Image (cartoon, rainbow, N blue to C red; front, side, top):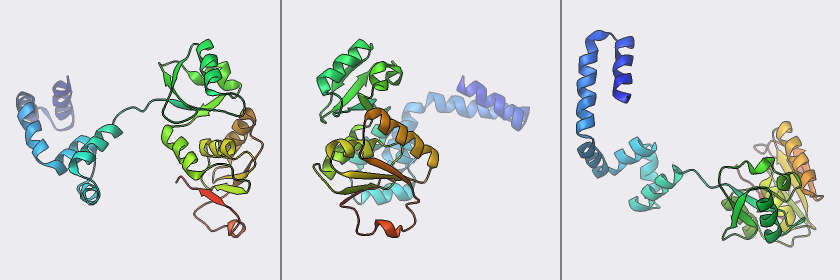
Length: 232
């Protein structure tokens, strides 16, 4: 089908005089695809570019820190569709209760290696269910959740989230630091309004929003915050 379409496009854009040549070249590629692939695998930089879109200069740069084997595995992993994960809102529920409520909604889920992060199984729309509308959880990937734990918990001072929308890291910090004041900033007023609505739905009272361009210095922020989140 691909060869047929390619020949048709060549005829349309160039003319019927090139159709035989186009067909012959592509049929030859089809017959020799295994040998051609093996040749390309011998050239690591060609493989990284043609298979995964990494420019040669970038691959060379990354090779300064990683082995070729690790880079190839990383590139393959980036092509995979990530699992949908949600963060349990511990202000309203616990992991077991959230799992039971999801099951009532017809959603299969399981615990992950990160506390309060659940992996959703299946293709059901979890965000249309009552458990989500009741604020029992919010969407967050595992790496985002880990960063919140790295930031720490139990702070009673001020925390700044410079690029907050859609808000998952702010929400995670609000749960881990219920006595802290979270200032969630974003350049988009529309996104901040959605963040504010989500915070109300989830029951967070220690989050305030502020429209701010984080590429510019804000004098009000200097020496004010104990911790800063910056996911650009």
